[in-house]
Image 1 (cartoon, helix red, strand yellow):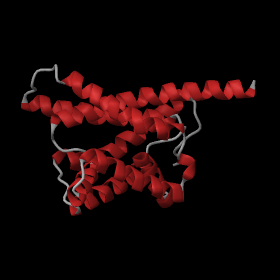
Image 2 (tube, helix red, strand yellow):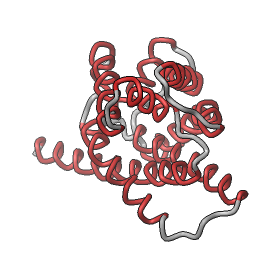
Image 3 (cartoon, helix red, strand yellow):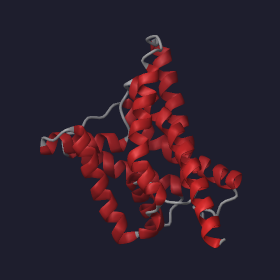
Image 4 (cartoon, helix red, strand yellow):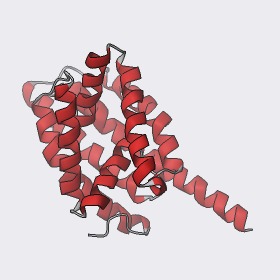
Length: 211
């Protein structure tokens, strides 16, 4: 019976994590479509792509593995089923939403900024929801949680700091940024903390954030 209950909980966690990542992927696709600049992790990947002369896909894997190695040394408990799901599910979900968005008419200048704002909010909403499930996170989110634990700052400030570091390294490696990168680096920390706390209460899960 205990094994059955454990399996049932894992299935429930998987569904919740996928739901959160699917919403997050929609947010990411909207941000990409707005073309105002990707988030800090995108700048980091772009920098590795230019510095090593490898494809962006391989650069993304390289960055994820480096961040995962750091997390393995500092906070292994953050690696769980959610880590594996995010590794495969997120990319396919983003590609799906990018395909869906191709059917929309070209937005006006105001529409571009509205699209970016919607993407930023939906990305934070999906991220906050799947983190609140508390069953493992992606290498990127685990890196931010590691900074949060080590500094003991509020999550929003830890995320801003971690995103700034990734953006800076990405720029030094030759990555590009846009106005959206700067906005995302500052705003997503506040938004994600808000949605993590709200989602934790909604799901009735053990709090991920302690301050």
